[in-house]
Image (tube, rainbow, N blue to C red; front, side, top):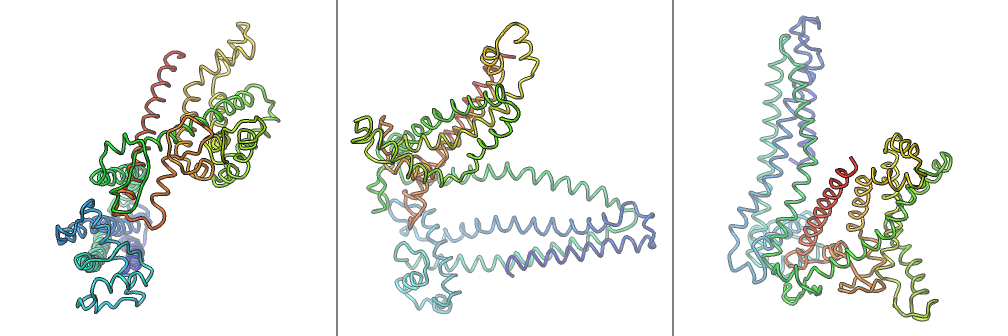
Length: 493
């Protein structure tokens, strides 16, 4: 049974259960709802929950566990000599999974014969060509063990889907019988339903935590897989980034230091633009601007936050880059030849800083406005001027929050991609010249995972190692910011 039909069937049974549970409770009370412990709605809702929760719970668990079991069984059938040098069983299984999906789609489109696959009358070259003709992604000529493993995976998945449908429907019917039998006038339906809703709300609140754990685990597993194929010392301490998809990465240099340097360099330039402008704008809006000016200026400033990053990238490529070349390029206004092209660290940094101004200004403005007015009045009462009050009272009191706003802007800068791709170029280099083209970790993650990348190679898996590196870097920034916030809070409490 298709998954959508299974979900619809469970919902139909649950709807019928709601009606049956409600009707049975009212009927046993002789039609007098006052004889019921709870409102009739709760008796129907009790049956509904006893059908939906077990059925959908089993469905979700089955969908999560079945691929793991199938892959474990299939991987045990792959010969050891099929794992080529520079590869691993995990990468071979990725190829098996890709082949299995391609065969399913090719059979559905009529490009492959299911009978020919079943009796083995097609050799691997014919299967490979048929998959390519059907538009399926095939990175190399498939071998007989890969094809057999893919067929086994499809058979086990199909059998598992049938068993899943039966088990889920049996759970739904069992919940229906259980809930309807409980629909008696003395049954505390309201207590049971409210307790069930509470458990569901707790589960919903846990989704964010579980999602975070899932993201981290996916990064960790793929990063470990990458380091099985590529030395960690060369990745973390290599000074050159030169991936090559030939020979399964044998000739590739995947040093992350040039990418980290480009990421930090562009982010520093962006923060050097955004922090002063954003902080000064926040001070003006909160301490100097009239209510009418504030009502106009703050929304206009926050419009910058709603502009898509691709538009900022085009602005960097078509406007800021040529402008910098006309000033700092060969034959420019200053008579120097520092910048040879429009793509450079300064181009991306300036435009990214403009994009970050609303993050700094809006948050800092809210934080400064949260400083109690009594602190300002006390400063004025001691004879301080407005500027002295801002420097010596307001800003120190708001400093922890301002540090948080700067941290948010730094995290946004580190994770930016499109402005870097269009404004900074794609050159991975270690240089102090801000007028040279460089690139960042996020830009290389995109480039490594787009196109016809072979996921059985270190060049594709390196994207997860880069993502894990960014995750650790951001976590370090958070820890540093927390230390700074606590230090200054102790000083100004």
